[in-house]
Length: 610
Image (tube, rainbow, N blue to C red; front, side, top):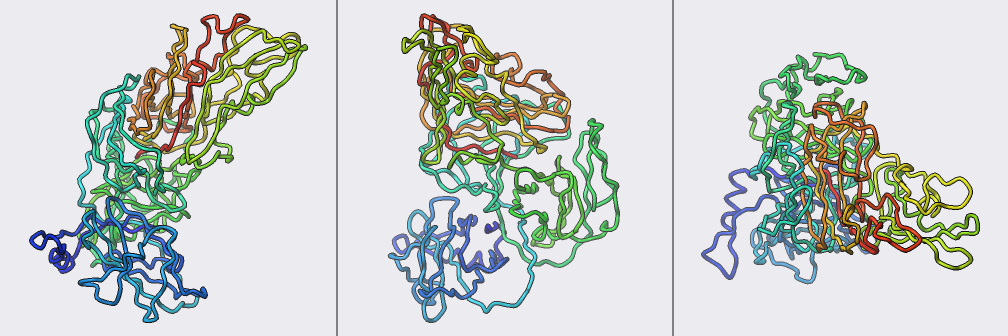
């Protein structure tokens, strides 16, 4: 679960304003915008977090040690937390030997009083949370609320652009979804997307975009110069999403729901939302007006989907659901009706101050296995590495190579390797294959499928082998992200083929059911670069040059308008952009290698941005 941001009541704000640090008595410690981003205790009751009063309801621990385990406790900035000694929460005394952090076990005092103090970078108390132990109630059901009020933080709205790649300075840890990231000026790297790189280290912090924790991965503080996409119905805002507090408010006027579309047509119903579509295969859900007069609190808005989450940034509400969810038929609460959230829609909610406002509701999802803690076996990702490591002998010729995909330290490494053919132990032919990890499937099973795609019998050919013919590109997907963030490094080894020079490749394409490229974004590097993070805007109505690049892409695609419904997502990570065509000869590379041997692409994190 997560803790939401919100507006402080005047008395709470006043209390915070009176807090000062001991060393700076004339400096007021101002309240911060909810430093606690992700909070989970093993004793926590469902729906037991009240961000407004800073109270956490827990069942009294039943373990013999009477300890509370901190399952998750993460911050959006340079903050820390310690256990409070005693019950003075206005001027708390801290137990410096008992930090509150993920994995910590906190003893519960005999008094049952437990509190945590949040400190800023100067060790000044800026917030205090109190844990209240309550007796368990039998079969009480609480509705989980995962929405929030309007955020005060400013967020640049962003239009769909033609694959410009931005870079930001990154901390030594991987930022959580709501954490603001400050930009620094950095030198631009040559790239097909005009990439600016962002410094980063490989130290990984748990990402709040995990669907298990139910928070978002799409927070960005920077905006890009953008070219508008062809679809006037989509003006994707910044993907930042800061959770906020929720509280009860007096009823206000009724809420209404309407689709945000290029034709400016409005739905007359608040219970079923549909958008105009040029896809004849998309079913139309009949509208209903049964809930047209229902007042909906923003803090109560949620979707009836396990491991989903709702995040509010200004007048944008981002709903994240697990991969594979049907965005056409999401049951929304408390309206208890079905909405089509494949595209942004307009809804009216009452915020915590009792004000009725219109919000743009955007739904999205992350792809499985994109924290790269280990290889994903869900079937979403495919690789040529398994075939590379499977040595075979055909017609007395031994074809061998080695695996070129590995996972470790929450990172994926793919590399470019030689594939060789030898006869009775005498090396006679060499080819070069890149490392590929992509959304789709791969039919090759052994090194002979790399060395000679489509080989059936006879003597393996020394000619070029296009292994992309065994690749099927794309996996089911219907959301409309505005871009993606990727944290990676690249080690460049030059090759001698001037027509197909060595460079890395990362791309995303959204494709319609009739093989139109709805949107795309790409980043490449032709020289080494350390671990860093870049943001790539997806250009709607553009292929970003991918279809004419000689990169490994699906055949039969053409550029769409950007307004088509999305049916699949194509994602590619490659250590050598051109080495899917395995070329070489009996004289070694013979100036034909399309990759540089041992070139490496290391991917640390990948997030879709909405």
